[in-house]
Amino acid sequence: MNNFNFFSDYLIATLRLAVPLAFAALGGLYSERAGVLNIALEGMLLTGAFTAAATFYIGNPWLGILASLIAGGLVGLLHAVLCVTLRVDQLVSGLAINLVAAGLTSFLARLLFSGSSTQQLPGIGAITIPGLANIPLIGPLLFQSDFLVYLLFILVILTTYILFKTSFGLTLRAVGESPKAADTAGISVAFVRYIAVVISGCLASLGGAYLTLVQVRFFAEGMSAGKGFIAIAALIFGRWHPIGSALACLLFGATEALQLRIQALGANIPYQFLVMLPYAIALLALVGLAGKSTPPKALGTPYFGKNHQPH
Image 1 (cartoon, rainbow, N blue to C red):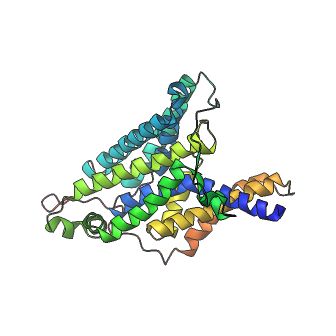
Image 2: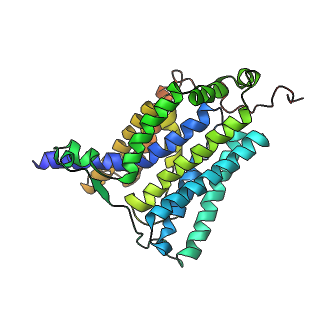
């Protein structure tokens, strides 16, 4: 029975640790399927986490989720302006946003929380589905979770449907594969990319909101801790597919949950090695798929339009 409880707790921890990664990966999916490289997922996660943490003063986590959506959308809009309109190098734009988000959230957190960013925040409780929550193993995992987890399940299914069964999804993929052909067909490449990158920011910010309102219930400087980059690895590992990327996030979540449990057991292993385990797994996953995972053909390439080709 103890082993069963240990395994059940491990699965629950895996899901909780995978949720922010999955939100960020879904966000990156929209952006990169439209051809815009989104290294800024880390900054979007951190922005969402900080904005949701502002609920310490208003006492309403639901307003925090809404505020994080708006803030993430604005960061996505900034990335779109830099990459689509100004045609800044997409990698440079993403890294710049990450650096600005890290510095700005740290500065504002010290002002907002009077030097202490570890004050307990009002969080979101679990929503128990009667009957189903009592199913052994699966019940506590799938039917006794919070609103954001249920929302994530819906978004993975919805994104899969949108990408592969709707005209918007076809347009999005066409812009990411061949923007010139899409432009010739009368599609506004810039408009589609703007929409995709703003959606990307909104979804990634939900991952940050989950961190502060569910997972830890306080804000700490730099608390995204590389999760945005792991989400990018999951996106590549999942071959830019919603379900594949979500499963890859579960793999990385399972790895992080494992290292936490090994530390708790007091194993004679340097904790630095355990902490780097999820990142090592992400690196190995990328190395293993180096020649197998094919990104959208126009990913990272700015589009100048039929009448505005670069000289």
